[in-house]
Amino acid sequence: MGSPATLRRSLALLAAGATALTAGTVAVPAASGAASASLSGVHVRPASAGHHNAVGRTAPLSTSECVSQIGIHCYSPLQYRTAYNLDPLYREGITGKGRTIVIVDSFGSPTIQHDLEVFDKQWGLPDTKVEVVKWGDVPEFDPKNPDHTGWAGETTLDVEYAHAIAPDAHIIVVETGVAETEGTTGLPEMMDAEKALIKAGRADVISQSFGATENTFPGFDKGDFKSLTDLRYAFKEAAAHDVTVLAASGDDGATDAQENGEDLYPYRVNSWPSADPLVTSIGGTQLTLDDAGKRTAPDKVWHDKYGAGGGGVSGVFDRPWYQAGVAGVTGNHRGTPDISMSAAVDGGAWTYESYDPASVGWHLTGGTSEATPVFSGVVALADQLAGHRLGQINWRLYGLSLLPPKWSGLVDVTEGDNSWDKVTGYQAAKGYDLASGLGTIDGARFVHALAGR
Image 1: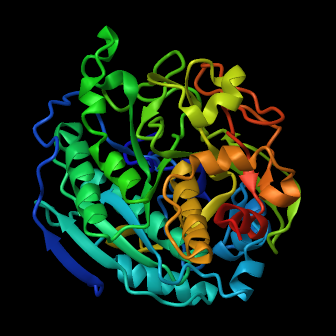
Image 2 (image 1 turned 90 degrees about the vertical axis):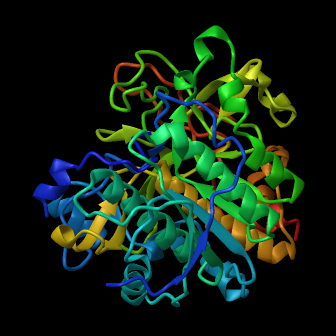
Image 3 (image 1 turned 120 degrees about the horizontal axis):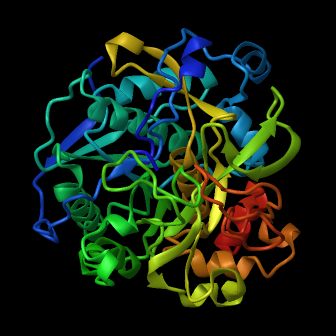
């Protein structure tokens, strides 16, 4: 996945083609949990890293303009709404109202409220006030620090696209103060923050666009997974309080980053928290849309020249009960992803960003860190329709897959694979596969089916 699942190498191809925070800010002291866990070598990475246009534009381009000027497809939030058939839900008044999406990102962005307002104005979306919770000792934002700007880009993508899909949902951004030795304190801080908000009743859906390769956790090579499993307390708390937890499956196909955060394993691996059975793993697809957001080709597994959707089998977790029906695909282990949404860089999402004075403007970003907040918005819509939190939804997803698509709203993805960096990945196929999971969604049908209404 990069560093924050959006941790970014800037895209030279895209670059060549190319205010003070007003949100309510709440300072919260760090809590206990596994804060003392020794995780040296584990790098918490934003999934968007490496999939971000470094040059800001004064205005977003249409899809056809992107294709002719940059050589890739680009999409607005309105096109995603059309592509996923969400407009019928909005006409019903299903907008995420009364629901809260919690987004967890290191460092955050000092301009998130301003940037969201510019984003909303461009696309005619209603404004909302982002609530910012600072967890622990969050350093002053430094636009010259690539860790800070990488996570700020992730924060921007997460907030703008969760809001675009569920415009009336309340959004809480939790900023954690990850140190230079990211993994040493990063994951415990994140899990502590999530647990605290869950216990306080503040979360309905948690969106995590970050991950760390399972193999990099201390003890993995000896079959000792305690350093990882000791971090699951937030997800257990979520299960007890019916909170839905999502995580990006990664941007490096069937492989992922080694301990140095840069080199990839030369064989198939998986990442946490995506692989956790208590989490819904969100994979990546590539959409081919016209300027109006209508498909000109079926969705396929994301695999372009910039990355590929994460997926595979866990080296830590056994197959959960809800995947019993796909045991022929996963074997005895937890398989990811569960479901997939738009993530391709050749099909990137427009975001507005001003946290870096050197590149203020409209940017394009892709990755499963786009797919995850998009799906968090979908879950918020379903929560509103159901009238309560849906909690763990994986059993619902695999149950829905047994129904005809016109009832389930699930749309099978049968094209593409997630091979990457000389590591042979998994092929999309009819039904569940380790490249796209159960496929993608027809939003209007899926939200009603998920909510049971």
